[in-house]
Amino acid sequence: MSTKSTRATISDVAKAAKTGKTSVSRYLNGEHQLLSDDLKNRIKQAISDLNYSPSQMARSLKHGRTKLIGLLIADITNPYSIEVMGGVETACRDNGFTLLMCNTNNKPHLEQHYLQLLSSYQVEGIIVNAANMQETAFDCIQHASIPLTLIDRKVSNYDYDVVGLDNFQGSVDITEHLIDNHYRSLLFISEPIAQVNTRKERLEGYLNTVSQHQNLTAEHAEVALDNPELLQKTISEFVTRHAGQSSAIITANGALMLLVTKVLHAMKLAWGKDIGLASFDEMNWSSIAGCGITTLQQPTHQIGYSAFQNILTRLKHSENPAQETRFEGRLIVRPSSHALPSKE
Image (tube, rainbow, N blue to C red; front, side, top):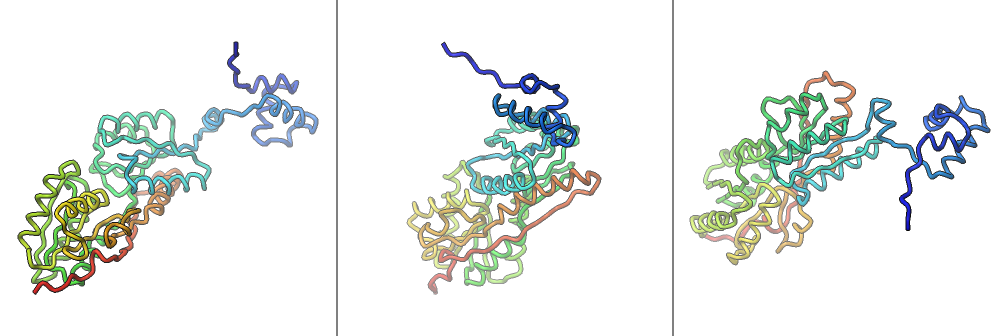
């Protein structure tokens, strides 16, 4: 019959070292100058014999610091979110913080739950990477006065720091690249825009760019990721309308890019040969899909790292006005957007 081992306490260490808890606490806090060499050696030996490790949470709370940062993301399977999380985690490690990550799996009822849970753990800051998050979910954080940074989105009626891509300029870069390569019929496809500023800014950059060019047909459509039938109908009608012209599709994120490649494959249309294709988000398969797909790579690791730095700044200067930090994307040109053979 096995017996369940119990974790050694500071009282156990004090008893084994034949001293009081105050002396052990001083040893653990690095106040060694207050202890004799003999006492330090006894405490050190007792800690080793008992395999004692202090509760970091208890010590942090005693000193008014938990050194915990919460990260809330909508979809743990999204490569963008994973790379942003990597940047946040690196920043936490570099600065002596621990990251707590919560995945809402795109379920609104989990947003409020996890924000309240992170607040109960007394995290020192929260980073949110969730485009469709309900604004009412932020109420508990505002009341708790916990520093919060949003990744690539804004929330009406809340004054939070924002870190992300320069979405408008990213769209300009992609669109101008296609126009320079003599595409004259363009289709911009986004998920439903609603109130998501990221999608708005990308569409605005596209529309602003095409408005400055004559002899150009520019269309845009909103298609949900769970509606592949509508996506195929949208692309099929676009291709039919502009048969005989140099046409190209721009997708507003990597998830849509994947769906579009599936639709084009089903329609037996080869990107870079029959139609042009470019997208936001560099995926790990972008270079090997067909002839390779032109993408706008986001500095995801830098965005995550910067989001943590915003929290750190906010902890020191809580009275500062909210800041918005935007990074430039990098256009990676591949054959999917090369000038097509003349169809004249």
